[in-house]
Amino acid sequence: MLKTPRKLIIAIDGFSSSGKSTIAKDVAKNLHYKYLDTGAMYRAITFKIINHNIDLQDIQSIQNLLNSTSIDFKIVEGENHIFLDGVDIEDKIRGLAVANNVSEVSTIQVVREFLVKLQQEIGKNGNIVMDGRDIGTVVFPNADVKFFVSASLKTRAKRRFEELQAKDYDKNLNLEEVEANLAKRDKIDSERKHSPLKVAKDAILIDTECMTKQEQLNFVLEKIKEKTK
Ligand code: DC
Image 1 (cartoon, rainbow, N blue to C red):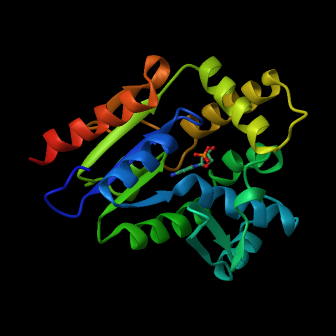
Image 2: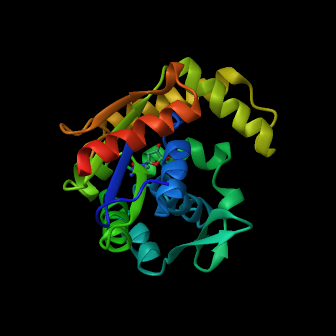
C-alpha cells in the first residue's frame, strides 16, 4: 500500500471502456481511498429520464426531474453500487438501453451542472479517485494527479463485449453492435459543446492496449509517488 503525503484528489479520465474504471478501483483500493464512478451518475440520470419518458429537448422537465433526484453510492457485497432515489440501480445502468442514450444526455447543460456540483461536493475533502471524462479539466482542474487513459476502439469494444457477456447484460448483442455504440459515444463525448472529452494539459497518458492490469496499477502508483513526493 502506498501512503500519500496528504488527502489527494486523483483524476482518471478517458474513453469508454478504456480500462479507466479498473485502474481507478485498483488505485483507490491500494491507497485506501474512496472511488467515484462519475459515468455511473450520467447513466443513472439517463435511466431516470428513460423511465419517465422525457423528451431530451424538454429541458424544463429534465430540470424538474433533477430537482427531485438523489444519487448515492454504497458498498454492496464488496462492490460500489449506485443508488438512485434510494434504490440500488447498479445492474440496470450497464445495458444497451442506457448506453444508447447516455452520451446524448451528457450533452445537456443542466444535467452536467447538477452532476458536476455533486461530484465536487463528494470529492472536496480529497482521499478520492474519480473516473470520468472531465474530472481533470472541469470537475477538479486542480486535482493533485491526473491521468488520461486510452486504447484502440477494437480493443475497447472487445473488452466491453466480454464484460456484457460475463455480467449477463444484453447477451444477444454482437461485437459489431458494441463497437458501433462505443464509436458513436466517443464522437458525441469528444464533440459536445459543454465539457467535451479532452486531455487535460497536465494529464499523464496511459495506453492500456499492451499493458496488463498489474502494469497499469504499478505505473499509476509510481506516478502518484513521483508527483507528490
Ligand atoms: O464511463 P462510462 O462509459 O460509464 O460513461 C457513460 C457516459 O457518461 C459517457 O458516454 C459520457 C458520460 N460521462 C461524462 O460526460 N462525463 C463524465 N465525467 C463521465 C461520463
